[in-house]
Length: 128
Image (cartoon, rainbow, N blue to C red):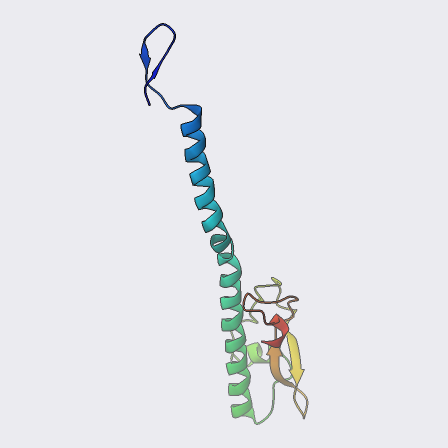
């Protein structure tokens, strides 16, 4: 760490090589950690999507058990107070992109996400 100048004095400081080595180590550690850190946002959205789908499906089942038929729309679940509001699809950022699966007698039998693409586990969002 100490180096000798041409006048014979000792100066304290780091050499350029030492600084480059430290920066290379920091860059390598960042490269290892960054991909996992950046995927946390996607994992969080997928968790919210699973929760919202579960809530919607439970509400549809409760409505069906109480009324003997499927609800006409997701808004019917809100009007009958099975939901406070139609949840937002976290991947599309909208309430209107839910894909409604009709039942045999009409109405909403099931609901799926309208998001395009694949999840981190490889499955398609539309198949959830």
